[in-house]
Structures are given as C-alpha cells and as structure tokens.
Image (cartoon, rainbow, N blue to C red; front, top):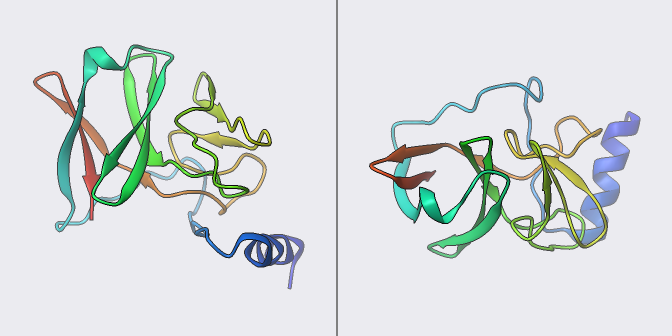
Length: 136
C-alpha cells in the first residue's frame, strides 16, 4: 500500500464518513449522466462573486461558490471534521475550511495536495438568473 493509500485509510479510520473521489486529475471535467436532475437552489444575485453559501437539496447540504461570476457546487461537509465548506473562506477557486484549515478546489471538490481525495462536485448551470445544481 502506497503512502496515499495509507493516508486515505487513516482518514477512513478517523471519520468513517467521507468519500474518496477518484479522478484522473484535479482538472478533469465531471460528466453528468442522463439521470441527473438540475434543481433550482438560489438566484444568482443572492451569490455575488467572491462569496459562498450553503443550500439544501433533499437531505444533502451543498456548498455554492461564485468565482469571478462562475458558480460551482460541491458537498458541504469537510472530510476532516464535517465543518461547513460553504461557511469557509473563499480565495479565488480555493475554499479553506474554518474548522481546521483544510483547503479544497471548488471546481473539483478535491483536497489540495491529496490527489483523488475530496468531496463530490456537482454540475451547475444558470438559467434565467436561477442557479441550478445537478443531483442524482
């Protein structure tokens, strides 16, 4: 088992409640399958550039981020201790969890410096001023 696998296994033992996201790279685009439904969650004017918020879709909390006019969405709970990422500090495309400082790329949901480890990122589109997030 390589260092990355033992690192991820250690996190599983610590929290037991997060997802290992497998990606070819941190820049990989997420493909949305035909079963994904887009749900209106907020108005674009409610989320100005450089800001973040949290919305709820069903039983899932989703963090929304406006990075220079582009909106991104990912699961809201930090992998380390479950703190809200939507309440984190946004700096460009990086959000820092307020709980213990873990940093995530809001475009991919990946933890910085740990390829393949992250929260689920969701596709977003803006239609008629409404922010729509894909859920499955």
